[in-house]
Image 1 (cartoon, rainbow, N blue to C red):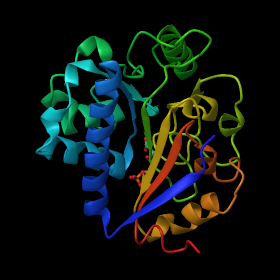
Image 2: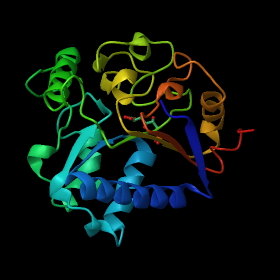
Image 3: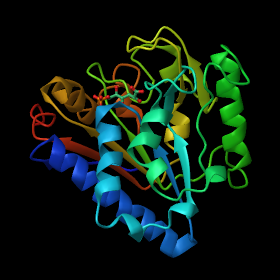
Image 4: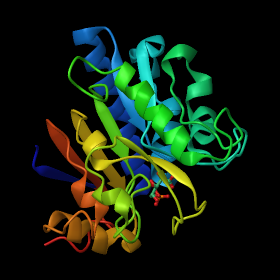
Length: 249
Ligand code: 6PG
């Protein structure tokens, strides 16, 4: 378990550009060692903004995009073509503009797919997919980088404070119901799955996130501030702008 490291950037645009550069470098480094890389994307303004900056980066072709395994940390359980889906936004921001191998891009199921409106079945299927791609003895792949946003009440992925989902200790993927952030039904990795990643990057901006960020970094319990429970095996980075970092001692 890694201790959180905090990096503060002067504004949201710089943060997105800096995280994009970091992501390109991390993927290229993993590919140098293993010939491939495994990344977990997130939704939200910050997460999608990073993907847009990656697309615009002069270093874009430093990555062999056909050798990147793409997963999602959570998904809004909506019809496949709904613009609010994290997958749809990630494809528009980046994936449709680079030569990813479609067989290595693993979206979470939509609400009009093979599982219909059963988010729990869709979650169980994603857990099986992850297990099938995991190394021996593991239940999820060894993600190189897992990116996360942070909500105003401290949620991360689709794990919200005080819910049974943030307390989940055995399942790797859950269907999430009655979410305070619309849409109400989602699919999310759980903290044990998030913790399997080599590096976890929590990235957020704005004054409204200052309190949950400070709480998470000052020892809050994950059940109260789920982002506090997002810890990478080798590294945990909190990538903030000055406003989101403004309540830190
Ligand atoms: C989602 C995201 C969610 C998001 C946070 C932060 O599906 O909405 O996965 O966890 O990352 O709510 O969102 P912002 O970056 O827009 O503040």
